Length: 177
Ligand code: SF4
Image 1 (tube, rainbow, N blue to C red):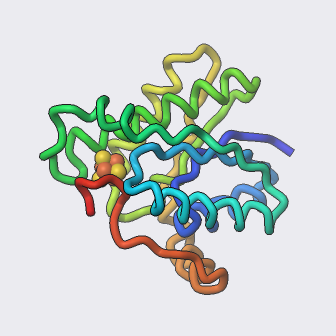
Image 2: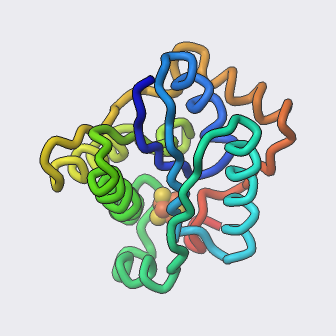
């Protein structure tokens, strides 16, 4: 079975993607790295939901650092940007660069993200950030796919209900609350 590192943002966005990858013979290793989430209690809830789902499937999950102060510093000057604006691009770049680095250090040649499953996010920005992050490490590829097609959006809704996932009402940072 092939392996890839899958940056995971939350259980509702990840479940159908993980299921789809496993069905394709690809075993993902999950990487929970989302220092954008505020407050920390919200971060813990989303992370625990991902861990619970990963454990139910026997899929490994790596816990990234939570350093929201560092994230805020990187977003300085972009606080008033709208969603899908420059702050979001930078936020994707920060998270996907860390994912690309971990994939490269772990000897994996491909990484992907669950960010693109949400219809609220820009696929163009996610592809731009993912391909940019991949280009920083030789031999690394960003697995670019529209995870809203092929019945995956429908499957997302079904798995959310079936598993009783916590379903957040905002993207993650204080500016999106
Ligand atoms: S709205 Fe979402 S993607 Fe945009 S900066 Fe905030 S957490 Fe990141």
